[in-house]
Length: 144
Image (cartoon, rainbow, N blue to C red; front, side, top):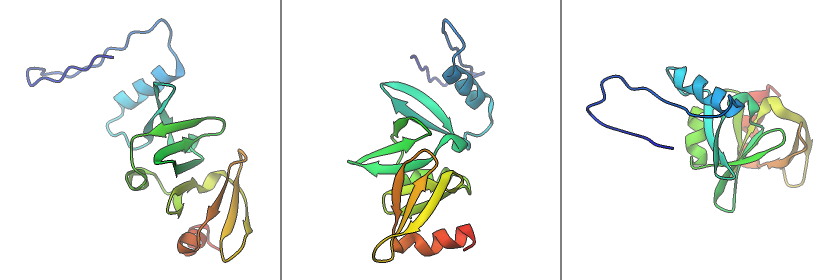
């Protein structure tokens, strides 16, 4: 990848070279053509950079000091911090603990656990706890 930043460039442009039009290239084109990057998150997996649409994301979780982004079948990492993601994500997302943000549209079911904690399972089988600190806002968001 080559990036050139110069004050001499009057008309910015992007050149992508590839032997085929992959899904990642299509997403990159979508992002470059959008005026704002509000509906995508750049992520990494095996040294490849991808762009995830918000609706593809199930769970974002800090694990071992890395911010992991989970989709239906894949796990990615991002350099963004949890609070930065919280600021750009849409209304489908809510913080459920100090280390997790969930897409409420991907929740399969919620069950009570011990000491006021709720237990959540997502449609793809991922599980996480909703801590007491965030439970009130979570219930309000769901309307319960």
